[in-house]
Image (cartoon, rainbow, N blue to C red; front, side):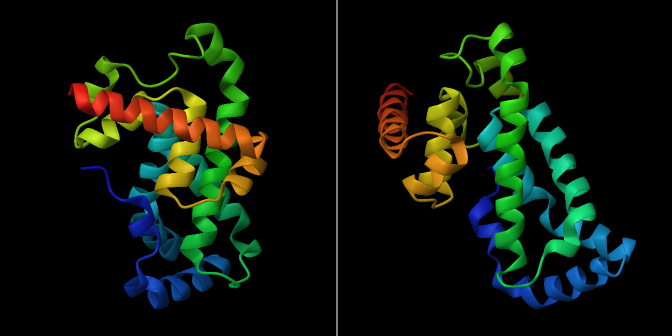
Length: 187
């Protein structure tokens, strides 16, 4: 089963250890960064996969998140939990990646079919039924559904992140729920 990114990002048992690691990384400690990577790599990848619906792109973005993390860790001020900050950084990088690669992707696949196809889904081992259905959703519906239903963002926040009206976010969420329900009933 795909790791629950929200649960993994908010594991309170690791908060004190993570705070210590973050402080060490901010001082340039590469071993502490390696530990931080091992601690957060799976939830970062899970969120990237849900947002991008492509295993290779999710792996690329996961690596980009940690490259950016190394360069921008000094910007983390500790005003929120590190996992919350990392979650936000991951979401922003994944959405930026989608925007940057959108023109290329649209030439290869139609907008409506931009969810993961059955053959690609079969290659993603360890996904449960709902995760597989989420990855099949069209891009905008998938992004809104993951950000709202899975990650807990409000439609106003999603609208700002994705550059869409609040009504469009709600509409895409409703569309995603309808498609998921329809697909689930036929599985």
